[in-house]
Length: 492
Image 1 (cartoon, one colour):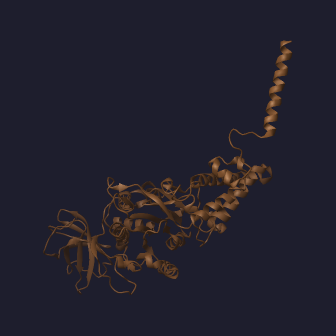
Image 2 (cartoon, helix red, strand yellow; image 1 turned 135 degrees about the vertical axis):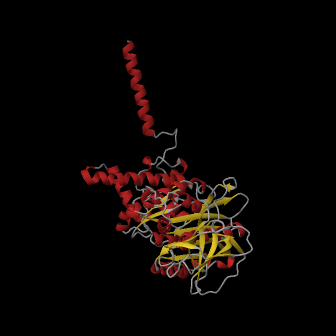
Image 3 (spheres, one colour; image 1 turned 30 degrees about the vertical axis):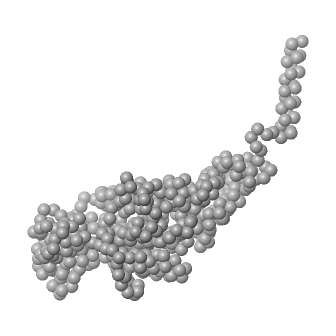
């Protein structure tokens, strides 16, 4: 926290300038994360923030370029307060830059409050369990990897894969069951102007922008601003969730750009690099962002987080994906082979996981048969994918009739369940499609769904435990009679 200084301290003791960093000597009474103004010789003001203090040395991170700053002529003024964001319910439907300033031409918004953007993770003692279902309209997520209120569920994309398109589709279609107030905070980091135009057009054309607060940091914007954008987005989300009791979905794209900015700043500070050049504290930094999602006891609102990242070289073991997977509660993985087949969205459900799925499904939330149907679809599809590898070796003719049905199921599953383009499906439609696919195989191989649900979709085909057909009864009587004859003959 910054000190309660009443007088702004001004210094002309800049020691060095390196990239976006300004090193100021002989400072006294300043605080970590305190806001700073750097005035150049021509009177131009640049804002910044203290990111390190070492005895009388303050390292200032400038929000913008340091080009044209003169070490001898510049003035540095310490403001005595940390960076804050003016928040208001009126920001819904607005487009802001990475620092939370309106850039859509709609005029200024008078803030209800000014909140520190640094924030902090939710206290584990006050944290409530995530529950209840958020419908995205995407079968691969709703049916098999359900998103739950208060959850952190990242999407692992790759270069050229439609991660942004999936994010836009979730924004357009997402809703909570029960009619509660729902809002989306969208934080875009390091995106191109083309991507920014795509998002704005997509949200505006469908009317989704009315419930979205859009924070946008472009690739040409200062690198340092990229580090502030997700914190501004989460500060806005906390205000809507815990002041207005709204259910808030936060989408952050692309976390890879954020981590690259973190590495760039770390290199400018000449810190010792960790894995692949990323700073050793990247895990802590990401956790500070991800752990701001959740629910608080006694509060009606919730913050659900869907960060999107691009895996370099499609490597799921890359530090960014690896650390994100550790912190969050599952992952949605996009597949390049499925994308090449034309499946949209190309979600590979086998490596996907939603660890909190069971808390958001079932009676009163989705449907009682949801868990069983999801498990059986996974099992059939996994079997079909394994058989595809076998077919590549021995050929399809060598497979049994049942194995060929598994292959057919895998093809139909990708074509009818995963592939939906911009189609918006509710959970009932998703589960019915799942049951139709399960009917490709006989009911005798269904092992993961309760009998009562199988009987509903396979009428007359399923035998109730304890009941026997007439043929089976006759066979048993004949076997019993034969044994009695043999015993009598032996006795004689």
